[in-house]
Amino acid sequence: MLVLSRILFIISLIVLIFSSQITVYAKIEPKLALKSEAAVLLDSETNAVLYNKNADKKMYPASLTKIATAIYAIEKGNLDSIATISAYAVRQDGTRVYLVEGEKVPLKKLVQGMLINSGNDAAVAVAEQVDGSVEQFSKHINDYLKTTIGIQHTHFTNPSGLFDKNHYTTAQDMALITNYAIKNPLFMEIFGTKKLHWKGKSWETNILSHHKMLLGEYPFAGITGGKTGYTTESKQTLSTTADNGKIKLTAVVLRSDLKRDKYDDTALLFDYGFQSFKHGMIKQGEIFKQGEKEFFPDKDIFVTEDVQGTTKEISDDGVLSIKNHKGYVLQMVELKQLEPKPAIVPEKIPEVKVKEKEYKGNESYVFYGLLLAAFAAFLFGTVKKFPKKY
Image (cartoon, rainbow, N blue to C red; front, side, top):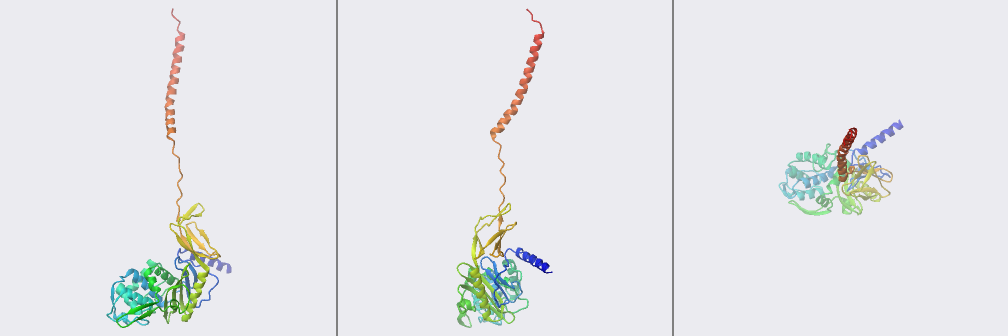
């Protein structure tokens, strides 16, 4: 029974590793003492999974939803367009930027109010401006998450993250959404904003990010952006990015009991990531051989490497596995196959062809020469048979 369980574990691990070229779960040691129920640490640039805990467990994201809403609005909406705030947006529960019904606000400003100060009223106004209604927004953003970002375990019913049993994600999906979003310069600018002057119809103030690591209230060097979340059902959630000058990391923690727990867990993840990993480069045109086959990248590719040592192995179908010092896969990169060079068949030298032609022509001369000699011999013999006349 023990042998069977081990075999099943190995088979499931192989299927997990080779079922995707983007997400690979490395077996990470040591175990981190995380208090959050689910967590993922990614390389922000390569998507390599450096640490995971319950990465694919269905969870409620709360206001981390607004990360998806923001990048969707930036890519699909007209940020210069002017939204007219609806009564429905104004009536939203939870954190708000205190919009007024009928107030006219640029879409970009609404995205800022939603992402920096987590305004639920701003989130609904964004959805209505981009898609006409929250219902249409929910349909379109779920298609966007699947087809554009490529995640499969997330379903959103609203733009703000207010609780709904059908509004869910996973730590893995949420980290991939964050990684996708931060590649957009405008999103990254807003995601990293600590304070913004806000002048609306009902109030004028400075709105502040709720992320304590970004604000410096929980000191940690290298924090570049972040978004908080909380509902009674989701508990504490957090998405954070950091950069130590050598590698960029993205950490997502879900369902922490206490606000402090999510920051402690994020710090543990970043400490581990910065100490254990670095960036490497596979140069364009570098050749990797597997038997008689040769593979190469068609451009320079960033890869995540273990500071204690990294190995690279190429499969028969051209998938390059980047492994840490213990042999566990960190990242998989698909390479292109180098086409084998065709065998060169030397052309016949023209002079040889001429000689062959000449030789073939001489055969007829030899034949006719022999025939003529035979005829001459015949005549000579015949003449000798006749007596001479004097």
